[in-house]
Length: 405
Image (cartoon, rainbow, N blue to C red; front, side, top):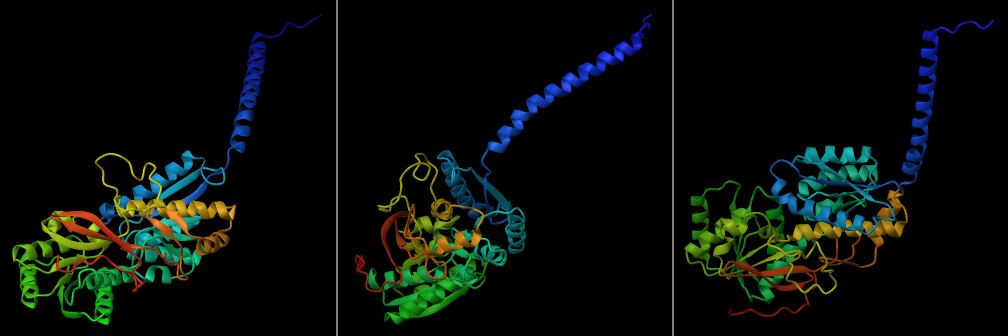
């Protein structure tokens, strides 16, 4: 005789069966998902270390944008070695110690290379960590000579302060036929001090005379600049070299007001920040050097988007240099055939044949600096225009004479 089955037992029995079927279904759906993820190629991790907050944010923005643009374009074309690039942006907080911490974070995350930073003091902090950890590093816009002297894993895309100081001294003597110069130097700025010293060295070695070096500091008052300009006017030089940033605009503005006829000269700091807003736009005729301009005839440069995009937004030199830093690194990884061997990647970057970038042809010397041309910009009635480009260290190069103009 069959025993009567308790309804409560049946309820729990069928509940258990249904749960088992549901669990099996979930497993069936999970299997193809896991299989799909396993088939996706792993990304290539590259760190971008710039100021995303703090006092350096505005000046670093073009570099950040340039690196992003290059990564977007590369990923659109399939990435590197058929794998997507994962750009890891790390904020250096606008400080050297923040830059060191950012580089240590990049090392822990296992990146194959570092792009950045912008300010030389930040890049030197990153470079010390990169060298110790054996991570190739490429700065797009840090110009201080000591950056790449830290070690053989450190490279830069831009020319150095020595290069631009030398270029402006040769330009002053050859193109402007200047015989007497005055230098205005910011004592709080290693950048300004480095350019001023190199300019003096080359200008005097070429037969010129530096009548005086006039000094100022950060946050100097307008009254102080007016007194400084009185000194310039009394010396009556042919040119005045002012290797600074926004404060250079204030000095040249006072020169214009006081009728100083000497031609003002500057470094690449005039191409950043607020130089034209603070007084650079008042210059009727002046000259400075930079790394790139959209109007220069770089025959080898690609003029595809986003580097020559249409619109009102300016394309800064640091942005173009950021594009070149990322694209050169991508080329090196392709040549290495892997992102896992960082020492091999370093060797390939160091020995890479001439790379045709947006900012011209790039090839590194023994210290990780590029052998490339300096761009000279001419300011005419407040607006910058391309004038010439030449190799700073080639003293035999001819430059179109502007003597008497």
